[in-house]
Amino acid sequence: MDNPSQKSDQRTAEGPYRIRFYENCGYSPAQRLVARAMVEIEERGFHGRRPGWPMPETPCMAAIDKEGNAIGLLTYFGESDWQILLAYVSPEHRRKGIHTALHTALVDKAKKQGNVFSINSSTHVNNLAAQAAFKAQGRVKESINYSFRLKDWGDGKEPTE
Image 1 (cartoon, helix red, strand yellow):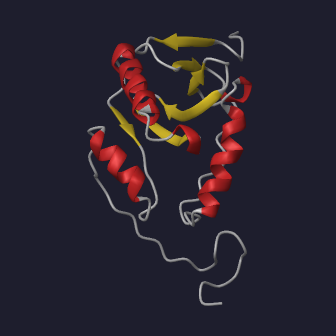
Image 2: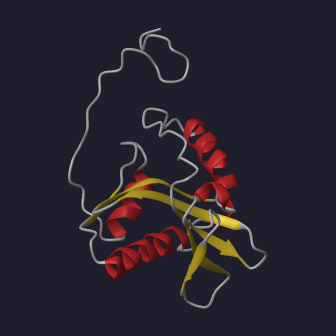
Image 3: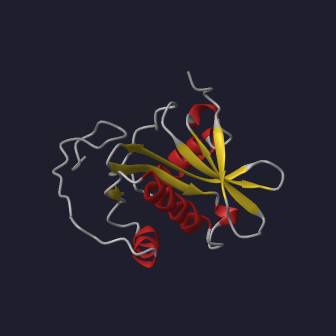
């Protein structure tokens, strides 16, 4: 049986962080960033997307700084089609290429594994920063989803209340 904290490093350019893979995100330094990410999603008004908390046993990857702290994370799951569940970079470390480095490392891992056909992700329609990042990384918009909310996700009220 695998050690739940089993990890491996992805070679990255010399810099202030390295990308590290974890088989079990719940036992990684990235897990503490999940709560920050969920709060920020709510504060920024992206509650319509409202991802569930990534399962602790889900694999993840983290950008780890020189002090050993996670400054960014990406959780994913799947076999031949991988779904990115959550990608997050601490606000003080944004616009430094960390999200792109995480995505690139995931693509490299998928190519090396050989049986992965696609890596999919989604974001809120109003999250223009994420959409711009996805496009710059070479991702292609393939669908648009619509929903009809009967109740607001957070407070259970009717949308017209």
